[in-house]
Length: 172
Image 1 (cartoon, rainbow, N blue to C red):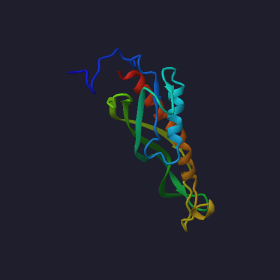
Image 2 (tube, helix red, strand yellow):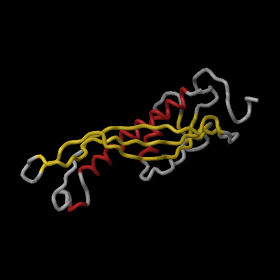
Image 3 (cartoon, rainbow, N blue to C red):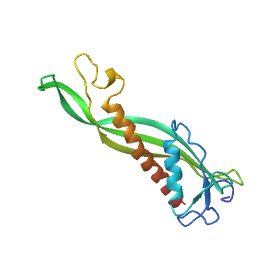
Image 4 (cartoon, one colour):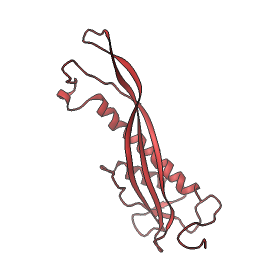
């Protein structure tokens, strides 16, 4: 009953026959930043060897639900630097999920998953506005908020990659 493509009994670590893992390009990873981070974390885990092909396991990952939550605010100031009644965000939490499925290459059966794993990162930013709603960077094309969000994607990718590798190593 437990021997088919489903539950397996174990001791908390990945069974020894599985030593190598391949990772196809992660779904919804627009620039490959997360795929690269995941491969790096797998390779440095000390438990798995990453292979581009012919591996024991295939790790399928698809990114889900990238979202922002404003968690810190301050009062805005007018052109003279006096406080005004509007409140603007200055700290944001960036959250992302990943649907993870680990498949045995030779049988095609799911060994683990699918499971949803989430990670988050908090970051500070400036929210520059003016009365005519044109920010001070390139007439509204880029803002400090956009740059801070893009920069926060790197530690977010690392944090999610670490959680996925921990899941692979210890969820048995």
